[in-house]
Image (tube, rainbow, N blue to C red):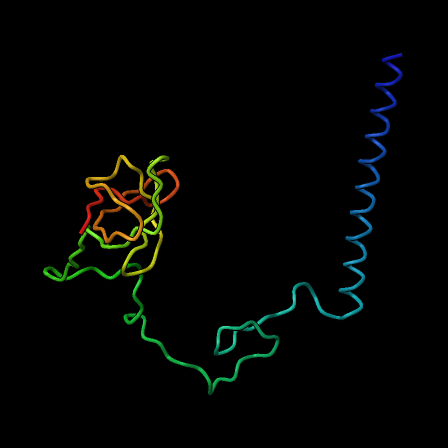
Length: 152
């Protein structure tokens, strides 16, 4: 019984494969017929206009803009010596929420109003809600975390 079932499945798969091949051939013939009807051969031409958009008409030569290849900058421009930005790792903010029983809370940055997670293990001083604090940022598992948090 298993053998007859197996051959039935094989014949069904073969029929499906042949049907797919036949459909593919029909689509191919339909495309060929459409190309013959329209009188064009293959892929239609596309042009790029002066704004960089694809159009089906040739671009107007009077709108052409000349660009010097030396003016094109590839990559990130190199920094000039002595021009380095000073990055202050110590940031200031305000404690928006802190649960002492659970040992975590959030600090809102004074400059960009971003919320940062703070854990009790990252505290230097004890903090409460609405305290003004200074802190540093470290990347945690779920984003940036406030560490070395001190009251101001």
